[in-house]
Length: 218
Image 1 (cartoon, one colour):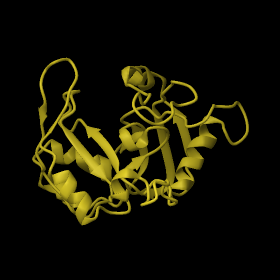
Image 2: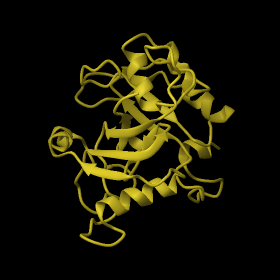
Image 3: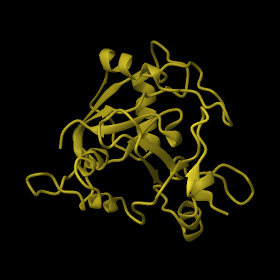
């Protein structure tokens, strides 16, 4: 029984506390445009049973007849474990967190959050985008922020060039779950008036790698 992994309670009902269960976030920490790490992050925490299940994972199935992918655990318990990664992995992990006291900048200061965050993976709106009202693109981003207890954004911008770069991402779940209203993804820049900590993941498919943001600068 691992509600923090499944997102459901013991009766099979979705958890009532929104997005506090596990997010499985594939990452490219070395900047070579190939995935090299997977971060399993649950705001509600991961209990003993969930941690045992994760530690027991040794390989995952892949497509294309290339064989199973071997996996190894590199950190657990706290996001601060990412400080033990070598550079440039640690620097990129720091951009995902922006406010974790265990990851320090080159100047030795502990980052205290970031005001500006940009898309690493496409933001897929969970509802049809309207021209006006609460279901505009900005309105849906605002609702996503509110549902996670994050402060309202000062500005939400679409980045056209970056959106084109992210267009090849798979944006629809093919096994389980409903598809998004429209198969479209956006690269966004979100700006707050005060620094906000990470990780920040928003929108459709955010528990499976979509809608992931990184601090534009620390």
